[in-house]
Image 1 (cartoon, rainbow, N blue to C red):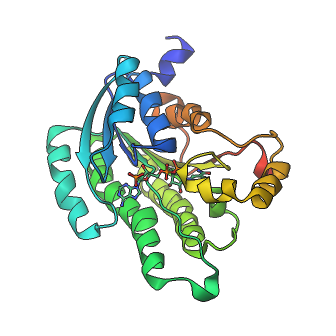
Image 2: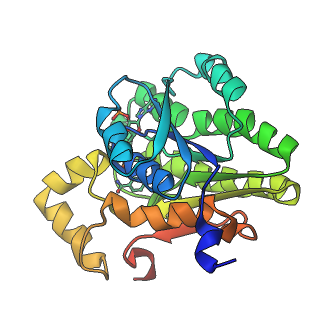
Image 3: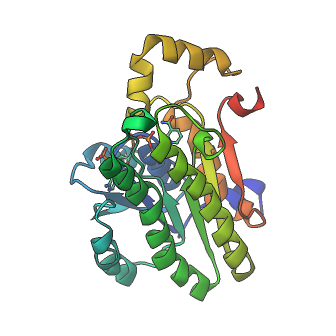
Length: 253
Ligand code: NAP
């Protein structure tokens, strides 16, 4: 066997949340390129760009529409997918951010951020993870953040939710590592996507961020693909509960 075979996702089925844009789109295309059949999860039926990119590389996909902020419907809407597929790889990528100083922070927005960024991650991990545990194999990759380690500014709910993502990653890894299921996370640095549009539009903030990045540039979504394929593949079978930082060196500074 050649070492690159360890990274192959041939005959695997992956489900990626937030597959319409940014990091979720890049990871979906990357997993498809490594051979996986990818189920694209979105909350609106507007996945054309992601579908086209997967078609262009000769990959295959299916789609499922679930609003991850509507927690009461997540389990029911997932059932048809679980009946149709054995999911080998789950990428919990969907996430939202709401910026407001803590003294004024809207409780409604706090709840929405927590619902999408952490509560839905637990629901999907539990539903899909229990089948993985039954089968004795599976890979769960959560998308954490630098704000799984740091406090951020004006984003208390996001920071709390991403710290929780890191904690949940380790908690599930502890329970499931011995059952053949690897649970890990990727913590992206500052990546140019919709999520960071407000930061990039703020010239001073954008410049201050850039100055702290040893790599000397903001990241792009494709920077996350290698880490995702690694954590989705046999190559990471002895990696459990790890938060893999992909940040151009930000955390090292
Ligand atoms: P993005 O382009 O805004 O992607 C977020 C994705 O989540 C979108 O596809 C969005 O769909 C989906 N989503 C939002 N609400 C949803 C809901 N209720 N149900 C289902 N899907 C929903 O930004 P991104 O940067 O790629 O973010 C992806 C992940 O990376 C997030 O978890 C984010 O926190 C994390 N992250 C990003 C950065 C960064 O610098 N960009 C850094 C660290 C971590 P719609 O667009 O259709 O609403």
